[in-house]
Image (tube, rainbow, N blue to C red; front, side, top):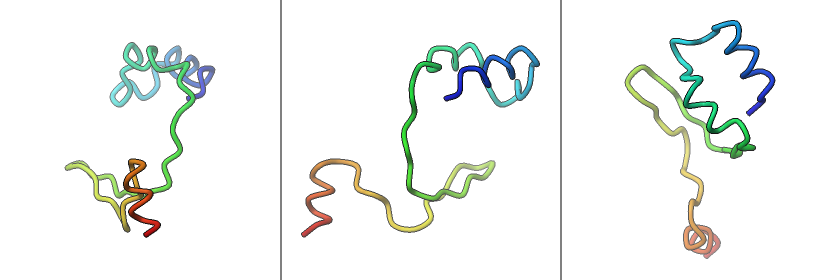
Length: 65
């Protein structure tokens, strides 16, 4: 997250239909997670494009076998 950008958008009341700024405030100090999977996002949900990446240590080990 970029705290200064969040603060600016909140002050300007931008994207209020999509962002719950009160809820987001609790996550502002979180650095984030890098996701290397590709998704299609639709009004009905999402769909993973391609194979899922391993999520657990066991998944990584199994993938290497």
